[in-house]
Length: 189
Ligand code: GLN
Image (cartoon, rainbow, N blue to C red; front, top):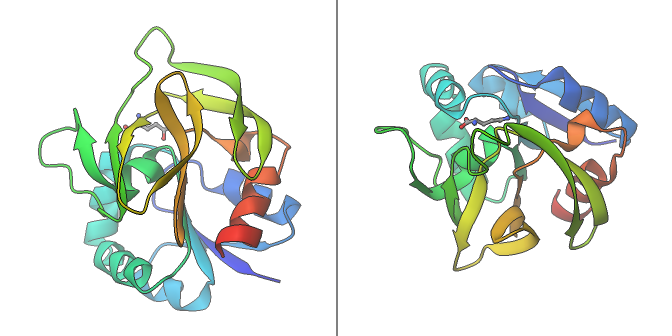
């Protein structure tokens, strides 16, 4: 059974731990850099990307995660986690540091204030139609290089893959449907 760390500094952490269990894996909170030694993969959850990024830096997790990712460690970023994985950010708060791992440009709060949260069925390559919960969601506005869009909502990419890295703008941990977590476990890890 795989043990997947869920970065537990801020955001929707326990929901991912539960979703991993439904998908047949063990979820484990990761708060410090050395917690990463005991997991096979990592989920960076939704929350507030500036806060998560700052806490990652002060806890020493930021550089460690970046180095591990470059060596092939599997990482799945949801929502704020997707923002942190991207190389470029359009309309990011000044000074926000990104892990800069995926060949993708993200826009925070891409769906505007009128649509703070909503659900939509989106066809995701390798998964099928999925009921996607978007909460102040970002979107990928451009991919290049090795990054591949796996699903779009309107003009925006809401699921993407680059080798050992996977990202969704939506929150599959909030639904009972564990296909997205299973995809991460079976195809990315
Ligand atoms: N809007 C948040 C951000 O920019 C992300 C929202 C979420 O993770 N649900 O960090």
